[in-house]
View 1 (cartoon, rainbow, N blue to C red):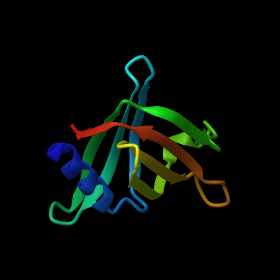
View 2: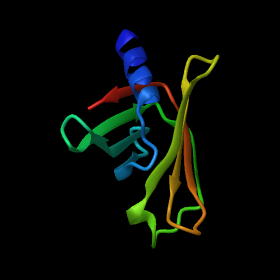
View 3: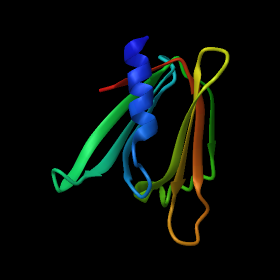
View 4: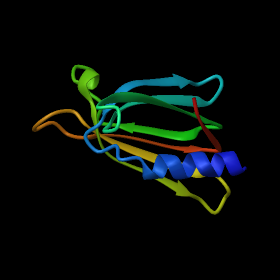
Length: 115
């Protein structure tokens, strides 16, 4: 459980505002979601890819996704909350562009690991 807690804390502390989303993969048969972010790292003066895999996923909700603009999504905000039931919720709000509505991905998960 220590590794899970460390991964959750690292994910919570990430500064993802205005960062890019490289990829979101849904594996419904395994109940997994993998999200790849592109985060600017000042020490490297470049973008670094981070990949997180969420497992034991349930209650997936996706709102306002327009596939025409899905390619250029930027992160507006994210939130990870520990629930009393022993699992977690993850909410990722993405911006599609000026004047376009934001998109939100929300799901519950039991495990998370950084790949």
